[in-house]
Length: 440
Image (cartoon, rainbow, N blue to C red; front, side):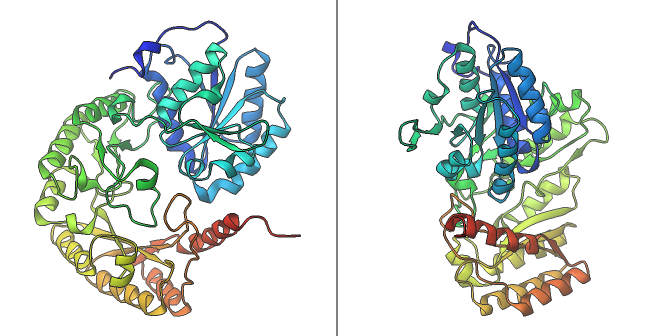
């Protein structure tokens, strides 16, 4: 694995910086990955990383490190649905620590999409886009006593007028430039095998955070890190990818030879009794990729009997509006093929998209009933206007009462599961966040 910017991989004078990671909620995986990136260069590999789980623990850790004269980088990452709670945590933390004790840096999909709002909520710096190289550069800057505000891939508020100031995009490097998790501290997670997504569905943050193209982690690098996990006691592996059967492909085509090579190599690296999960969370399948040949490859290697398929809607009009790139028939074909191969398909269905009419929702529920009759389960979701997507300013359509009742009935016979009620509440909170605070 090559070092990051090898021309700068040299020791610098000054007290060694420390990183304190707020390791809670939706930011856990991102913080594992970006702190793991410190191992990619000699001069940052020994950086102390402290994982904390509460504002009080973070305050105590920062205060102790600052009292010892250490420069401290406080690392935060969160999804849009956690922004309000996390900002409140930051406010409590700042009230109980000395001013300037740490540089508070926020990264991830929300901070990237809403840098000004994130900074105004109290963070000192935002890491824009991919955070691995940015965190390495920030640690170097703190060690050298340099201004972190000059680091590429960051944003801050100007001191004179509070204007948003950015330093350009973070570098997008091959995935094997960095580890997929923090091996030194034993912080494992699903191994990211593909970053970016060519499909660019209008409700999804992934292609707009990482660009609408695929970058794949090479098989030999995946196997390397699986072996590290096994050496540390791991016995199962999952993968992170927006579309699992796109592995190895640059476009809409499926490269089953690449998928087969990946899964076979990982299986060989696992111990006896080790488990390999693919095509289930967080490595879902697109329905048009589900063929008998693809199912034969999965059946040869994987341990999961459930597969997650992205169906999203039973309305052709809504599927076209969200730019899904497949039709309703593809979803039904995928379920039939998966069931015939011995898998249980869990089909994602999304309700409440902007402009969705009651008739569209009725079509989705009709599809849900056909799919459950065919042997599938439904994973129900409610639309949320996520920052960074084309629908960030959209008003969710209400889930009509008879559709809500139908979902409840399906839940009663264990034919559906999901967080659609909580997501409806979260969607309303996101709409209000976009509009700004209510007037007194």
